[in-house]
Image 1: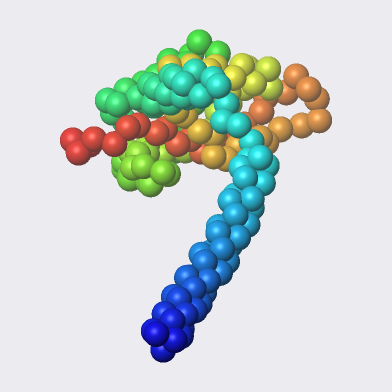
Image 2: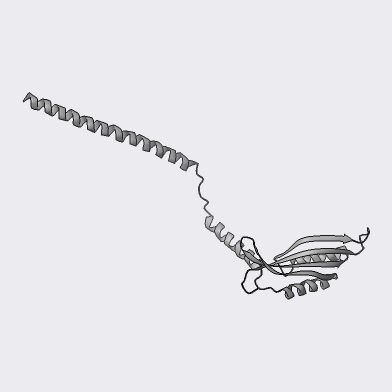
Length: 178
């Protein structure tokens, strides 16, 4: 009988040891998870809240993108561009001589665009030249870029005529029909 009690006590001690070791292992995992939760909570507390007006900002950005895309024309041809520049020169009372036109080329600036380059010489008074350049920038072609502008004054007097060499680039949306 004592042998049975001793065997039962040994079995109970072994079972208690396994349960105790399992408890210690789970307690250590519990502490590790508790530390991870505490660190994650601290990180979450430091994270700024997302803006409430995000949908409004997205709508404004989409509207801005659409207006910029509308500023770059789709269908332009070189004759139309040259005629518009010459009519603008007549309106500003300057003489414009197209020097060099380059064929349409394709440039990638975030996306593909057709580019028409035109080099011109403009002759007139300084105020007429200034008026011409301002109207050129604010005129029909919103995608025009003045790549280079050299002004040559004939003399020292402000009322003497000036000559300007202007390199223009006109951008159009990419289509496969150019």
